[in-house]
Amino acid sequence: QNAKAANMPKENVERAIKKASEKDSAHYKEVLFEGYAAHGIAVLVETATDNNNRTVANVRAAFNKFNGALGTSGSVVFMFDHICNFRVKKEDINMDLEEFELELIDFEVEEMFEDEDGILIYAPFEMYGSIQKYLEDNQIEILSSGFERIPQTNKKLSEEEQEEVDKLLERLEDDDDVQNVYHNME
Image 1 (cartoon, rainbow, N blue to C red):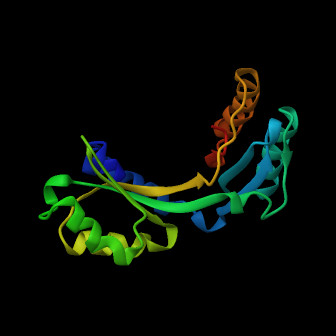
Image 2 (spheres, helix red, strand yellow):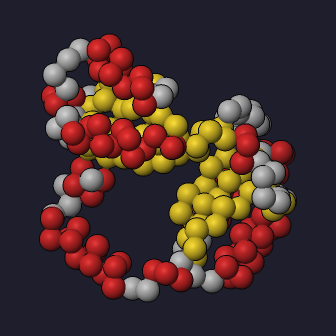
């Protein structure tokens, strides 16, 4: 869905799926790392790896190099809400936005926004499958979808402090095993 939204040719999507399914993906494991950057900024790092030792070493080295500390499991994850999001085609909704929001209330939809690209829907992570099924059953085109971790509170830093934290975030994002990096810096 996300590739289609970016106008990627169908052949490219099918080729990428075929290539990924041919590889031995059974050895890949998703691992969530938690820690603190400098100045008390909470950081969550989502990874997918076939070599956990390499990934742990790389993530730990990044935290250590930039005055952070890798935490234990559960040390910061509670500070973030795990949510799913969908961007749908506005023209496919045959009711006004308030009615549509009421339709989705059973799916615990937390927020809905309209912009020039469509309608954005935010809901708890666990509701992803149910919302996707509802949208598909009602012929509402899903332009994109995904998952996010939103910090419950943000921490404001000075410009110099922010630059220091940004170095750690950039280093983590450059790692091939890292899928997403989330933080609570304002």
